[in-house]
Image 1 (spheres, rainbow, N blue to C red):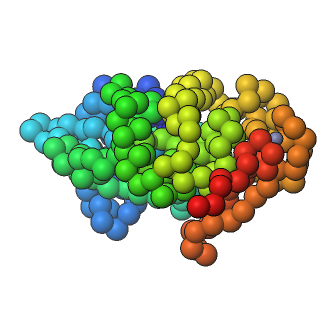
Image 2 (cartoon, rainbow, N blue to C red):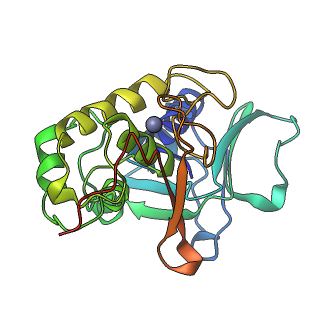
Image 3 (cartoon, rainbow, N blue to C red):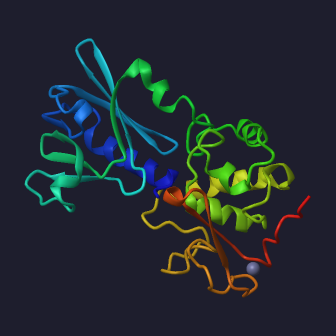
Length: 267
Ligand SMILES: [Zn+2]
C-alpha cells in the first residue's frame, strides 16, 4: 500500500514532466470518463493531498482536476515517446502525453475527472496532510482524540484524522513511541511525539526512492517491526508479533514487539 511520501513523489514526477505543457494525448481508461476529451488542455500542476493526486488542467474557460489514487497496486510512470512501457498496457488506467513524453498511470485504484471547483468532494474529508503546506499538528491531535475507544493503529490509518499514513508507517510509529498498536487512542500517551515522528519519517523519505524508518537503507533492515514477524526485535531481540484484524476481505496486519510495546491494560 503506497504511503503519503510515495504519493508525494508521484506528484513531483508528474509535475516535473507535465506542468506547463499541453496534452497531445489524454486517455482515461475507465468507463465513466472513457470519452473525456482533454487533448489541447494545459497541465497546470499536480499536487498530492495525503494519498490522493490532483492533476489540474485548463483549456479556454474550462478547469478540470484529474483525481487519481494509487490504492494498493497503482503507480505513475513516465516514458519517452517510443520507449517500452514497464508494465502491461492493459493495466494502464490513464495516459497523459505531451511532446516527447508519456505519463502512464497503471493499476490506479481511482480515476475521476472533476470540475476543479469540486475538488473538495475528493479530498475535503481528509485530515491535515503530513506533507502538506498547511500541516496542522494540533488539528491532527484534536481529530485523533475524537474517538478515544478506537485502536491506535486504526486511528492512524484513518485519513480523516491525518493524511498520509499507510500500514508501514502506522506499525513503525507505534514501535518508535513504544505503544502497542491496539492501545485505545484515549489511553495512548505521547501522541504528540508520535505525530511529530510521523511528519519527520515521511519528510525524510519523500526525497528518496527507498523507504526506511530505521535510517538503514539495507534490505531487511529498513523497518523496526513492519513485516518482520518472528524476527528478533532490533532493540531487545524478542520475536516480533503479528496479528490480523478487520473483515476477511480487508484484513490488515499489526506488527509489534511484545516487550518494547506492552499490551494495554484491560479496563
Ligand atoms: Zn523489543
